[in-house]
Length: 313
Image (cartoon, rainbow, N blue to C red; front, top):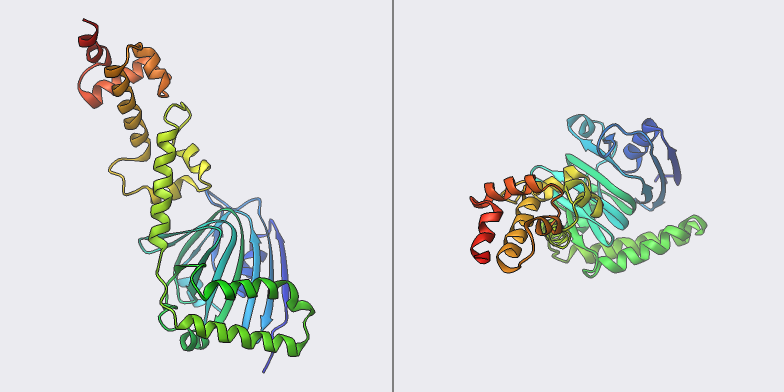
């Protein structure tokens, strides 16, 4: 049996080298920047053999990638990956689904999968790569062909496996061949334990949690005149495109939702306080009184001054 050698990749502003690394360590992707062409970029990736398995540690700056028929046809290995996120933020897109990943999450992917990803905050990922035949034998009901899914790291026995892999990541290089073989056997046994578990797919829940955090953030910051989709996205370490995708279940665009919530706060103050119209508008983030009056009249069918008038008589 041929044993693969360990490899290390230190990439700085070289898209071709990075693309080659993705193809060899993970899967082929066409890479881009988060919101445009990929320019300033760096990554450090280390790949270590572990019997028939491979352990890959990577730290990469924000960027995106897409995987279509061309990338599928040039995939060098038929594999399944168990990918743990130690730090950072990433969104994965497949068909009409979006999976939100952050520290502590585990993603299972398949070399037959098509889709895209977007790293929005520098990530540190640890990935155990298995040949498909081993994944099929050891992980029935856990690995789903041609798909990506998220499972909770806290679910036993996933956590013990990645606790062990964290130790092996720093010690494999100094271990003897005999010790490495024993470690590989232990990892395979733990994979078999995982295969006996039924773990939930929580990708939708993660997106739902992000949507709830965004809505809460908007409510807490309505008075900030700079509040807009771009600042909301930045506060949650996602791109505006990802924010729109996550918030698409709203009946209106996020900017309209922000304006509507500000107007609702103004309405409440107009009917419950004696403060001036101008003070109330400023309090809730409107920098132009004429703009506020037009928006208020459009939403409620009455100018703010007329809403106030019955209380002043």
